[in-house]
Length: 203
Image (tube, rainbow, N blue to C red; front, side):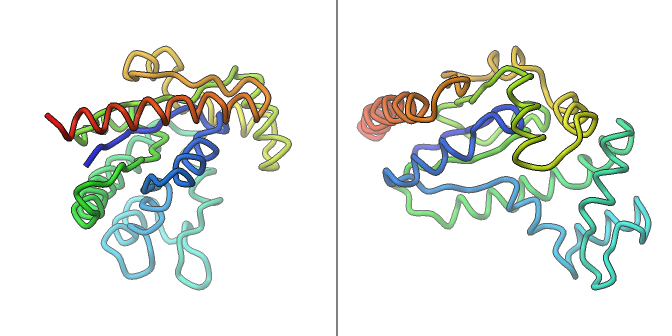
């Protein structure tokens, strides 16, 4: 298996890159989806979140009220750290399970926004970060996700700095450009990945 850790700032374009590589044949594991899975109704994860944050973070149907939880954690670094201490081990465990179920010859993209923050240490063969200027992230969050400027800034500030992601990454993709140019760069890196994965399997 050739395992790629794909990270980047919020609204920087990770999903665009992951989708493109999936079109080329990569298998994707989405950390955001894994994070949702581990707090489904009836899970240990949801029970621990409710124990830590109270029943106010549940909807009337007994599901996690993500908007209510976000209001708490993005205004309080201590609460954010508490949530991460609950979720990160569960996400790591579930991801390891998912990886073990994939074909050994796969090229796998683990799309993980908090690779740096959560000190994700799966045995990556390559780490790639997708980056855009903060002002561009703000614009995208406000225009495409309906956040206020204050909400958008709080989410950006809750993440690692670009320099921290760059220090962890082997390659950097610039998404502060026309989509076609980003896809061109993404395709070029995919061709490099194919060569690297072939070389790795030969070793």
